[in-house]
Amino acid sequence: MSDLSTRPYLIRAIYEWCSDSGLTPYLAVRVNKQTEVPIAYVKDGEIVLNLSMGAVKNLEMGNEMITCSGRFGGASFNLMVPVDAVIGIFAKENGQGLVFQGTDPQPPSITNSETANKPAPTRPKLTIVK
Image (cartoon, rainbow, N blue to C red):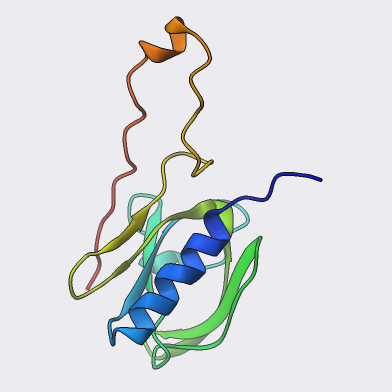
């Protein structure tokens, strides 16, 4: 059996927590070739999306892709975000949520002293767009 990534499950969990708490779930995304978002709203290769029920329609959060439609500047746009492109998910109101490091949300296992002496990877920059 192949190892499943915990990333999509954690994204869905924080989304549900935000919704249940009456908070606005925001998704920070690193834009790549597989990401379909309105390019005019991308800043420094990243975009932050409001995933609240009032902001998007037909939200589907699968294990490999997050899809929905939303309005940007009054125009409707279909969004496709690979789960691997997600930097983090958080509540707009208080900033609580998760930020993922690198392409694998799991911390590396330490196998020898050389690995133990390496500095931890830095967190990706997270910009909140209002």
